Amino acid sequence: MTATTAAPGRGAARTPVRGLTVLYDAECALCTHLRGWLERQPQLVPLELLPAGSAGARARFPGLDHAATLDEVTVVGDSGQVYRGSRAWIVVLWALREHRPLAHRLSTPAGAVLARGAVLAAAKWRGAQWQGQARGGQWGGQVYRRGDGWVYRPDTGWTYEPPSCADGGCTTR
Image 1 (cartoon, helix red, strand yellow):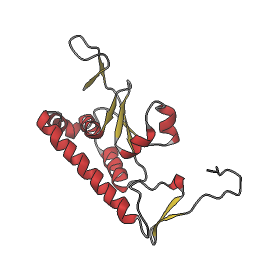
Image 2: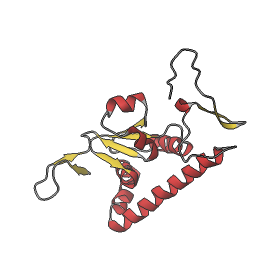
Image 3: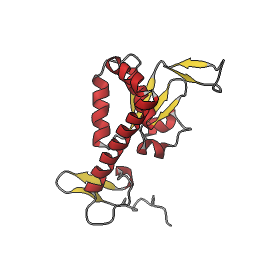
Image 4: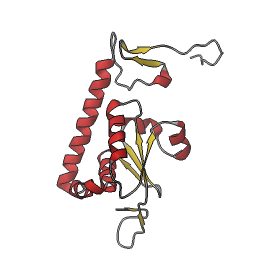
């Protein structure tokens, strides 16, 4: 697969993809399951799996909207190509030996509709999982993050534990 790095049209420069970095939500059960599945697949193009929003992702890709990478799967090619949503999944499948034919089918106009539907279904399932974990209060529609003070315990679910201000590190509003 190649990604256009110049203006589209005749004579546009084409850059081969020799490696892909998949940014995934390390706190999402579905995302971590898929990460494990990807690690076990024979790869034609090497995949690097990196937690989205992590210090490593921020340092490596400073120009990305890292909040958006937590909401929508994002794949970055070794030459700076950025794929999001269903296109990201198609390029990941293209990198896998056993799934490249499927990626070619999903890259057609009819296949793109199916790919988009699959990504939307996964997003809906993921949202339902987070919503189901919110207990005793309004769920704000956002993902709960450990860095924001949310803690998951298997026996009680997600609870909020605000950070301590004892060290003077809290900001006032």
